[in-house]
Image 1 (cartoon, rainbow, N blue to C red):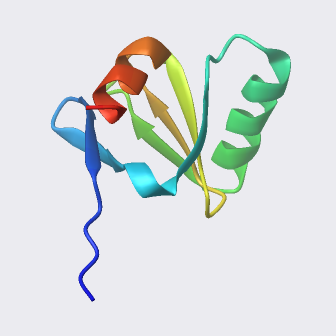
Image 2 (image 1 turned 90 degrees about the vertical axis):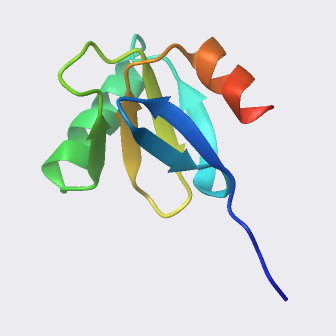
Length: 81
């Protein structure tokens, strides 16, 4: 049985595996900021911003957290294509 993983382009030649994503959030709320800081502290943060401002925080099913520089709306529309 062959399984294919759909990749979503998140900018700067970076992609995320859509089947690993469990939640997307904006980095405005304090609990999301704390989750990003905890992921950074435990070395489970994937920074895909290429030095740009973080617009979206993506929580992955294995405990990793990714930060990306595209808006949650853009990410969602790319994921639904």
